[in-house]
Image (cartoon, rainbow, N blue to C red; front, top):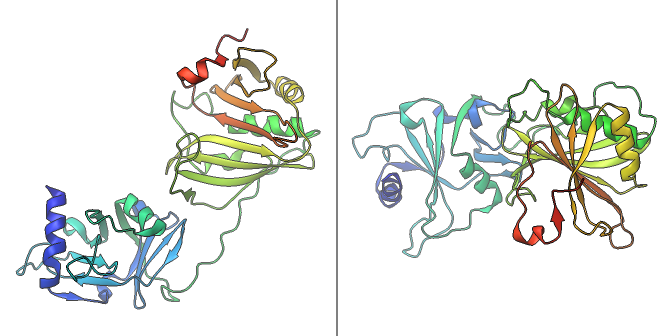
Length: 342
């Protein structure tokens, strides 16, 4: 039913009172939950309407502002519908598949975003991220420099002071331990994007996390990059998760391999137990393996390990999943792997 009203609004819009510039009453910045530190954002000002997303900034958008589309010709409420134009439709009218409904539900500062995909109009990565947000709240006034001003580059988040690692394996074990969830956290829960900043030796990209058009290997649509610096060696890090939570960490070591034996010894020395949880049925097969990590005061997690195998794979890879159970093997995986590794 709601989609029907949206479609009707698109058809009726040209006949309603419209302007091509947003009114001053809408000037401001809008973000998910009213938090201006999050993306995507909508910014309305004298230069026009802009969107600011992890995929880039776009604007001023070609828009048409409707003052009566929320209730018909006699409507006197505060809702203002801003239609975003994408060329012409097959009937020669403006093709406007995206609507920003400002002051939605007669609540000042609330924006609902609607997308009518009937004509399958490509709207681009930036607008796709805005559409997925579905709703935003006003979080501040329009940029004093104007909506076209570029935001200052966000600074990376440096790691908190920690004793230097004696070896790369010791440092990596410390990083893994710092990323495990505390035992006081509820089962099957995840922490937020700021929590990962407590892990030692890792410099993280500034928040908010980057929103992706396509999911990562475990299905995550948000990521935050980092660099782990351990005993003079660096590993690339990607944290993956949802908008408000982190679920998985990916590590890529393109330098001298740490080596599984050294890593396991460092984990044991630091008080962690690493138990082989999934392995190839053929013990001599050079394939990835999974370890269950546990320690007093920590929730268990699973560590995927693949060793360097030059020249085909010159790098060493790790993945730390905060899930407390491994995903069931698919039929194809079951032909190669087993969870009975003792």
